Length: 200
Length: 176
Image (cartoon, rainbow over all chains, first blue to last red; front, side, top):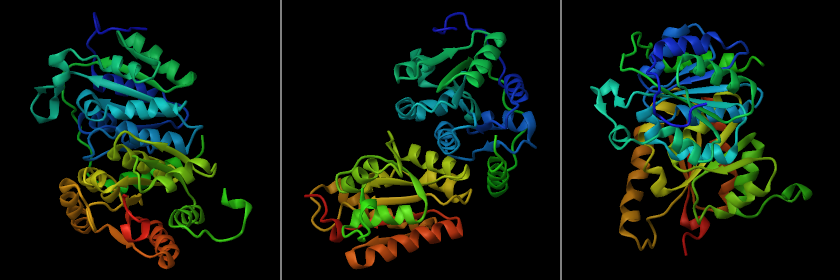
């Protein structure tokens, strides 16, 4: 797969979220990060109980997913996290690398901006920080950029078939999420817990 | 560890560990702390628990929230200054979603504190907990510890609300 950020095809978060969720056949849990990551997950299938939509705890999609993965080692768990969010909780990459959850995958949507607050550039973009490189340097060996849609599919297939933890980096465009989630945390938690109570 | 004997634990940390077991709390996440060290060490040594350190307290709150929603009860262990990093994570995650995240905080910044920063941050802890309606109890006496810790944990799960136990220097001896 792709180790550097050179020549990466810029993809679309909404389209890839749909593509990812449509390929999940074994009640995999998906934790959406704050804002657009969430909204595109919502648009991909809001009736899906295994999706969890975070509210304001920016940066905690991967830790929440990691917690689900610890509690249910037989269920595969995905976190969908933005680059700005990941930048807030880089330490969790070491925590995850240290515990080696086999069933956890972090999908990192990287457009280099804080899209939802007005599109300001992240310091990582200005500095040329390679977030997948940070994941690998944190000790997550299976961390790669997806060069294009086909490679994204291949990396997801690998995440579904092999031991993790996995990190899949995706360079995305700046199209905002279109369908905002409801703001109903109790309902989200209850439907997610009901789905998690059904075995895989 | 203690399972070889039926004698009840006699230290605050032994009592705490037993209360976690009695309430099926198996996941222990922590950011290191000197006062909590015997509790953390005891959990590490006991295969009943899944115990590991986190880089930051917010992260631990996220992990315990996720685990709880997937059927595994957990606790976050931290020091007073670490708790002070948590208001947004608590308000927007376990409080908003009503997930019973347990917390234990070793109290520092009072009764002989030498570090002005710790003394000031300590004063923020209870107002933060109160403002979110998070039940908290300060454990000061060994003879009350088993009752307070067990009942606080039990109520958190029964009412689906986060709860915080504060370990006072009166109980732990504090930082030497």
